[in-house]
Image (cartoon, rainbow, N blue to C red; front, side):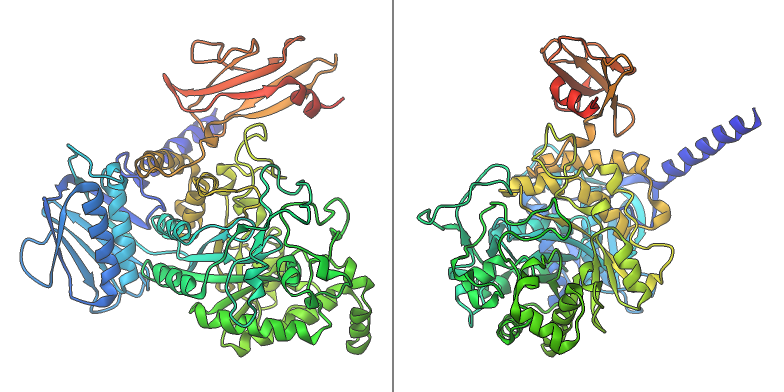
Length: 635
């Protein structure tokens, strides 16, 4: 009895602490370091007077205020250097607050006005983003909202990021996305205080950046044959099919994107993925390959080119660069040299992942290189390549970064590592003294399915919102100073358009934002998810697509001892009621309510389920074929 009493007390205290963390009418993501709510509210006047010292560095902050207030609230913003009756004061601290650092801010809303102070303009920018989340959801609208009380709760917020590296990776190679779509991606990510856009610019399906000294990279390498359906199993294109699907960014486009991102306090890190994932480059310049006949290769459209069922995932066509050829390194010197001039960010990501080595094993050039350099394994061959490439990157004044495969065979002396196959590679690299960004498939691969595979484009794994929220960038066994931060990745093999980009990113990127910004001690899924639902309302206002998968239950098929079939349904979040049918009709809240494991009727062909909160439908109707349940239950 004593243990039960203690448990109840602990739960009550936990609930109380959650309530103190976030007021019901305040739903800020990522959760601030410290938030104190007071009585009262401030109402924005028709003319919003912003007081700040004139400075070009402040202009992005002012632009954000002007654009949001005019577009959604129909308000005029007037900027003054001094004077009374300011609506919003933007203050750069004369004496730096060392705790706030470069990106922290102090936001104070009083009954007579708002003050945002910071050490740097980036902090002011993030303070304004928080202010937007304090305003009514209509502030995210695309047209002026009518009859809205533009009020802000009286509150004090002291906030700064946990990590300097808060990234999202956007794969623009598998499918090309326009310059305007990349800008929209940036606009969406900064609302939640991400500051790093990792652009995956090259792969087997397309080379997306203009290299003036190597024009075929884009005239040939940027285009393939359009296919739609289940990527990876497409019919191989015929020789006469038009190769007009794709695109690339000119160097002027890149400069424009870099500036656009900088004006929103975002860095862009380019990635050129080598020596594997290089079919687009090889199709453009066959002399990059160690394999005879590469002049017949074409840019991949989604047909099968690797055998993932076998160890080492052997390639069916050689999509690697020749590590034994000086032409390869001359080529990469030109590529890195031009890219280094376009991107101010300190790091260039050079890939290194999933390099199939079966064609290397057959190459006389590679065998001669191994004999000359005393290399015993193919992993050492790739290490030789990576170390030479690291020197090229450093010769252009940049830092070298690669996926965790660059550990195999020996990592270069100054390389930074992005750990994607879980966190082990990151741990190993940090123990060797290397900088690490954590990006494990386990938690932050946003191309993974968000719900049951009956509803999602087919991918090889599922990643639910509550699992993403468990992401912790710093393992217990390493020096935290070497973990630069964390990043979520969106690969786009199965993502054909920007609406699907949004669907895959949100709401899971919200979970990542709290993992890389908020204090570890303030993370709790029970308080996080109600805030997500408030963000859903804002996404509706901005016409941003998001996934409702969090409302979908998990299906578990069960084979009973008598060979009959049962199924259990588990909601991802609390407070949901599940209703179901086996009679092929569409259930609503007047149908049978799920309370325990269901016996599947002998002649049923499908199970339909839907979730409600009270009287409101929140989930979509899911249709589970009984044949699928039979297959999952096995014999």
